[in-house]
Image: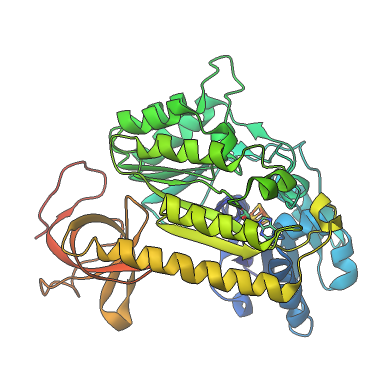
Length: 453
Ligand code: 5AD
Ligand code: SF4
């Protein structure tokens, strides 16, 4: 019987990329990926535990499986696996193995044991196995690639489960990062996103001793890599040389994601974020002083323990001051084992109210800012298609979603995915732009523009 697997991924880009690594590893072992659980001999869930809702989603998915799994093997991977460990078997007895995000290199050994008929197999070591140099990664998109440069996290934010689920911070040797980047370039990838929980805390552990800015410079210089992104940055490690590297390298995208979490210094102190509102704003000033216009996005938690109405208003005023292009906002969710879970909590209804107020506040900012882009030209890297609207879905260097039509009449005949297109913006909403393809379309892998015939 052919060995097949289905994998569902929850959570962040780190998890998305981990699933690509797992896929590569399994395909090397003769498994093939199938698009639905019904066709698969093995079901894998790569899980997220950042907030309670994310974790509940995983458990309800597992509960829903109970009656259907039949002879299938079921594995739980990722952050819930790491955080809940063997307890998962008690919740969901039809699970055969759990494997945390730091243990993917032991997956083949785990599978050997499962294939030999063992049940309740675990791989939960936190920092022993390196997952950087997996021999083969099967990426989902042939033009855009993630590269992990740093794993884990050494910050001690009082709300966050990540240090428990992904272990201590480990940077990857610069030579290994460059090898992967050059290989991707040679295979036709044109966009690279460097990944890490605190990506800019990167410090090359090899004798070369590169800083994060040096790594950006070197990747930014690869001639056929047209866009370089990095995420997520921590404000405390956001040094001026990073902005200088952006200035020097046009391929470094005009976008930085810099989570602030709160606009109140008191709340930031409770969160142990290690910077004040003013220090964060100095970072923003530095980015606003860059040669190109760097768009900013952020993460915000509302209703952190002890957050008063005044604190919350400071977050709203910070949004006014920074003028982010987008904001990911969340209600604080207590996580087992974290310091903030033990602090006096803000009532649920109050958290919900603040979230709505914040989202409406930011929606207006985005609507106004996106409207100002109407009439202009933007370059979009095409990522997909919305058949129903006859639109291509692209992303600008500033990380805005840009949906556009192709008025040339060739829409049905050419696949624009992976191509860089010049698009005239014709309309906008709070979360995306709408446009029309202008006349030139660039070939992937080239810096210049080429007309397609
Ligand atoms: N509750 C709510 N949001 C959280 N985040 C991290 N931990 C929590 C939590 N316990 C948010 C932060 C982080 C983003 C990935 O998720 O804003 O930047
Ligand atoms: Fe979720 Fe954090 Fe794990 Fe990413 S690292 S999957 S956000 S818990």
